[in-house]
Image (cartoon, rainbow, N blue to C red):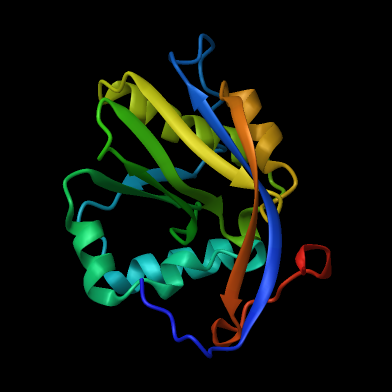
Length: 191
């Protein structure tokens, strides 16, 4: 990914927690609330992906894929190792999405996972996360990874732990986020 050397940026400090799961969770997943449904998006368009990514990630400083050129992102979305799933509410609106990356097969990485702002706080998180986890294990995966950071929702890490992931390491990172992206950077993250 190329960057303009003199581009204005905001320095953001986060702690990234890397997690893994070596076997499927022993307990059944909680059900999604009535009327909610998760559907695979086998031919996810750039416009759909960018809308989902921006909608879910704006409050959590998701910026890397905003910087990914269209051709590179289109190739990623077209890859047979990438799977996109969209959560829909009872009215059919997009309520969240997740992305599974099987390029490290037989290990699957949960690259992105989250809810749209209107879906946060309604008890959907664990059930939707377990959908992602169960989908990966049903595919024949032999391990699963994910990472979260201190820019994510405060319930992200506890929800990953409840779903059966365990932390394997933490890394402090500093990101230089281009101001042109227009992201609202919380003061607590500014370096």
